[in-house]
Image (cartoon, rainbow, N blue to C red; front, side):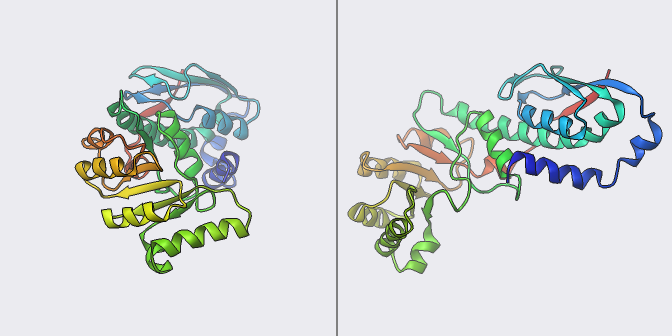
Length: 277
């Protein structure tokens, strides 16, 4: 779903047939100004979304950005100002805050993980553990926090996980089937496969036919050994229960990527407020 589609549906959900409170209490001719006040330190995300929300609510609203997505923000900072119809500003207010607070929370959390990897080659990846229909926005927020996006859905990568292997009848059969499928359907997609043990890893190395190996729930010492065994023949990715406290130990194994589902599914929204002035 595109950002525009998300905003359109969100406006319908929130406004419905009209903001009766604003329409009944504020004169149609009333105009005003408001700004986004930062009330918690973090990383800003959602400026582009906020501007689109205001413009879709009322094309005559004037939006003035003062900061950029990805900027470090501190208590008391002003991210943007908006001017125009007072009723229109109030109609857009909650939706702007709902998106920006969550997106900034994701960006802020992502930045903490990214900062733990300073000086190391590993890149932090998100996952598909996102809020349904909000994936585009949540993955955008990950990028604003300095992270990288894994696949966006089931359609843009072959990701052979444990259940696929089990249902396919083994690693070799699963890899063959995936490559045959891509050839028959003339698709140019990367193939990644998950392994849960050194035995499964050796089966993949013997078979080949993939682009990346996901080493799932390997402890750092085992991950280091696995990365050494792979020896650059395939991209490597660590996953499974990796936290802010442990991520650097995983990155020190020389793994290429570290996927962290918590970037998008275990988030505290950042405190922001839209204030009239």
